[in-house]
Length: 187
View 1 (cartoon, rainbow, N blue to C red):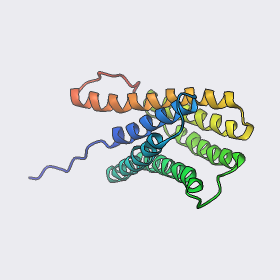
View 2: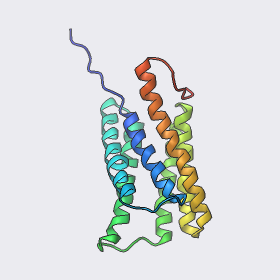
View 3: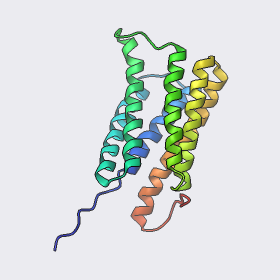
C-alpha cells in the first residue's frame, strides 16, 4: 500500500521572503540608508520570486488564501522593482507622487480584504495583515501629501510588520521541527 504524497509547508518560505524584504525596505523608509541594489535585489529575488514560488506551492496544497497572498505580494515586489527601474533605464517616466499613492492605496484595499480572510486564523497572521494594511495606507498618505514624517512613521511601522512575518515563519518551522509549540502564534 502506497503512502499518500505529503507536501512541505511553503508558508515559511513566503513569509520570510515577505518579512525580510519588508524589514529592509522599511529600514530605508525610516531613513537609515538609501535605496540601492541590496534592497532592489532582495525585492526581486526573495520578496518577489520566492513568494511567487511559495504561492504556486500553496496552490498544490489547495490553499486559496496562501496562493492569493504569496503570488500577489510576490508580484507586488516585482512590480515595485520594475516601477523603480524603468525610469532609471530611460524606458518610462517615473510615476508622479499621486500615481504612486494610488498604487499603494490599491494594495492597501487588497490587503484589507485579505485581512478579513485571516480572522479565523492565528493571531500573528492577523497582526501581519492588519499592520500591512496600515503600512500601505501610511505609504499612500506619504505619497499623496509629501509628508516626510508620515514616510518615517511608515518606515518604523513597516519594520514591525516585517518582523512579525519573520516571527511567524520561524514559529512554523521551529514548532513543526519540535512537534510542539515552542514559539506561540495565538491559535
